[in-house]
Length: 194
Image 1 (cartoon, rainbow, N blue to C red):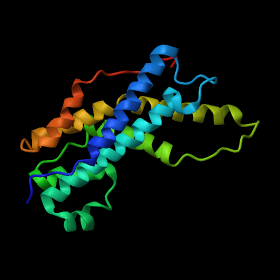
Image 2 (cartoon, rainbow, N blue to C red):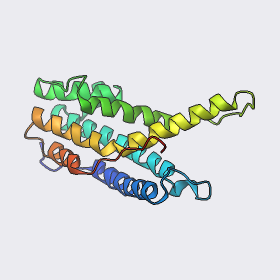
Image 3 (cartoon, rainbow, N blue to C red):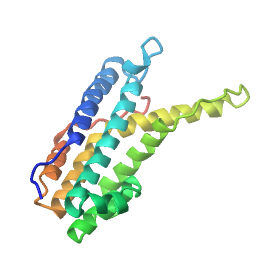
């Protein structure tokens, strides 16, 4: 087997890191996640969607590549491809090392929030506004937007936690060490009014 690894997940993480920096800068400069006067793609909410999508894609790309290197591409395509995102992170390391990431590990919790946010973004639906139900519709929209921004703010913590735990399970996995380095990145949280 070759020691050369094709790493598109790094490109996806670079895109997400750029969007993450813009997201944080926007919140710090405006004190909010979106101003009506700003073009949506430049707002924190717009950048959060980029972060969530690209980090999720990067993590799925990484775990697929890890499985393919450990078990071969045919096995991975047949048995791993159809698994859900979290399931891959639970099952693949266990098959590869004999030990798995515990279901209650912080990495899996963060991944669950990230995947849920990704689903909000990827499966967003237009809403037919009903004036009689607008308050509840608006509350749902605001809650989903906040969920996506919070997941984006903690996305690189998720990457780092997954890398750290995989490094513990498989110390010879160089890319896991690279992912674990993201634990050194600053952590951000939304204020209650954010």
